[in-house]
Amino acid sequence: MNILLTGGAGYIGSHTAVVLSQAGHEVVLLDNFCNSQKSVLGRLQKILDKVLPCVEADVRDTALVAKTLQDYKIDAVIHFAGLKAVGESVEKPIEYYANNVQGTISLLEAMKSANVKTLVFSSSATVYGNPQYLPIDENHPISATNAYGRSKLHIEEMLKDIAISNSEWKIICLRYFNPVGAHESGLIGEDPNGLPNNLMPCIAHVAVGKFPYLKIYGNDYPTIDGTGVRDYIHVMDLADGHLAALAYVRNHKGWVAVNIGTGHGASVLDIISTYEFVSGQEIIFQIEGRRNGDIASCYAKVDKARNLLGWQAKYNLEKMCSSSWLWQNFSNKA
Ligand code: NAD
Ligand code: WQD
Image: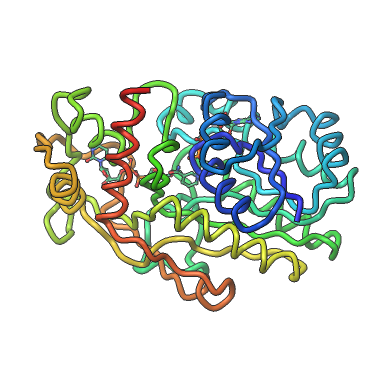
């Protein structure tokens, strides 16, 4: 298939580009590089031994997106493009709705005009809000506590309406849990502009001495060791999940949402000790107060992904941490 990856130069998009291209798909990237570097294109070329076409554009440029869909005879779109920092979304809701919601509307208009009706959308476990039960299945009530999460909710609902309006649409929303790690080459990984605030990149910063210590946000949660528990998933597993989702959605009309996680929770202290083990570095930490808006535990029920997509995660915490460490060392030198 010919597949357009909006936000394809970003963290998850670049890893998915590798998997799709290696599986024989023709991949085209579209990105405005607001949270990624153009150097990722050269690194993708090194991994794949081929150049992936990349259109530098904002997804809100409907005409250019429509032209791209036509020029490359695109069969399906994976829509990664968007802003994703929860804290920033609370301060800049207009930017978040404009980029995420308006960006998706623009893409849908372009897809409609080019008659491309197959879409994989990057949703998030954040749409489950504060979990009412664990593990979280796809029927768990959805809600949002911040503008980022609400933008994902609005998009999911909008996509549902579009699938209802015309039965030609084939739409799958993948609700990612906590993506971490990097490609085994160490050439691509999570490379956000500005300082990280997610756990794994913060630990990586401590490991290489960029941060003096890790702040642990709370050790008084009702969890195994008092620290927050999450369903961390290796980004290469997540990339494989997109391959499986495409294979499924191309043959299934309508709208569906599927969790993409491992089904297992790990605490902050679990991640620290695994990172210390694989890197040989001591991760100095300090216990701080709880972070605003954080929840105690969140992990997925993954049966739907297994049954519908025939996909399940295969990498463990050691692989997640060792690939992050490899990437951290590469990006430190690059
Ligand atoms: P990322 O920031 O690394 O990648 C997003 C890419 O989209 C970047 O390259 C950025 O430059 C581009 N982009 C942003 N706005 C754009 C626009 N208007 N037009 C064109 N390009 C634009 O983020 P990521 O971690 O790869 O996340 C990809 C998607 O997955 C996002 O939609 C995000 O909300 C979702 N998601 C991410 C996580 C996570 O923890 N990383 C978890 C759940 C869901
Ligand atoms: C994980 C755990 C923290 C940093 C966020 C978004 C979510 C999704 C993924 C996009 C928590 C603790 C963290 C640190 C710490 N993104 N922590 N010290 O909060 O589960 O999810 O990213 O959709 O929407 O909210 O991920 O990596 O920030 O935190 O102790 O310096 O690590 O308290 O328990 P989170 P995270």
